[in-house]
Image (cartoon, rainbow, N blue to C red; front, side, top):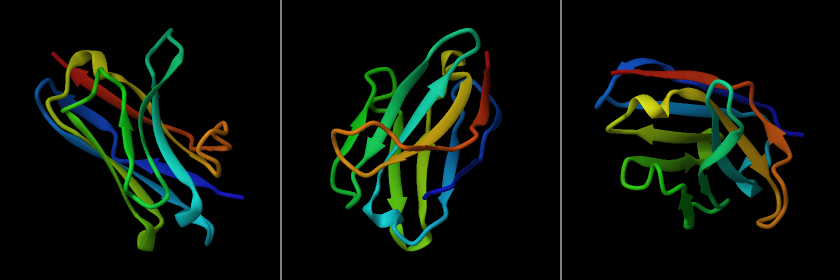
Length: 119
């Protein structure tokens, strides 16, 4: 069982930066692949970024490549999402998620943190 708690969201002007954190409970955090997703008002939840259990492999949605960076600190049971050059269309609730298998669905989800980018 993994519990995930996101933090770091807020209101920022276009072009600004935010760093989201996701703190995980449990001693097996380092064995989980982690991901970030987002859901804008009235829209479905979409993939943003993912990182393998050993932070070797990362994946990004095309819409955030070159602007967002996912990272993790297994000693701190935390995964991060550094977001730069933010745009109004990045406004959404951001969720982190965890899964055991590379090809499996995400098993655990956080409650989300709101990110609002003003123009």
